[in-house]
Image 1 (cartoon, helix red, strand yellow):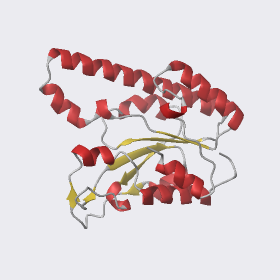
Image 2 (cartoon, helix red, strand yellow):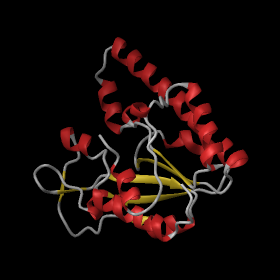
Image 3 (spheres, helix red, strand yellow):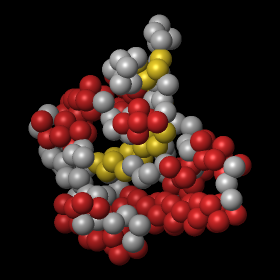
Image 4 (cartoon, helix red, strand yellow):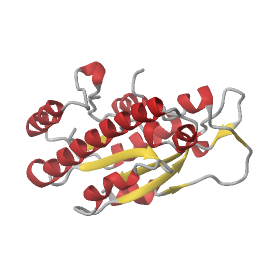
Length: 212
């Protein structure tokens, strides 16, 4: 699907380019990160938003593993090793981007707040000043198919004080009922709700300095 965040950024007057597999950028291949660095040397991006799949780091995976066969377990571990490798390549890319190409670039790294893969990012956070914004989907109208608000919980690691001040604690108000985030609803919750994207895009517009 099209990126709602990219669309919102463009509609608010920011420059935005989505770089994913459909656009020819396979984040599981090492040459891709060199290509991204080469792109950055030309475009000098103002900000970079990264979101890698969290499937193998989901808490549900621990439940599934307890019931898995030896073959299923080995298949899962191969997938996990692949994700660790991609995460390490992504961190190397960001560290080089920050140190050699765009030292003032805004970095946003999103994952579900309770994803068990967060320790993989410690090498990045120890090398620069990062905070984690906590955003609950119900604050921005995220709903299940039955119409109940859904408390999808995102964490956005970032090095942007103004973003952290604006979005650091967008948690549930506790004043409404939640639907369960599972099955098809959980899959659909991987896409940011439009109000959240518009709010982020407006924030960027307010702090825009005509960079990408």
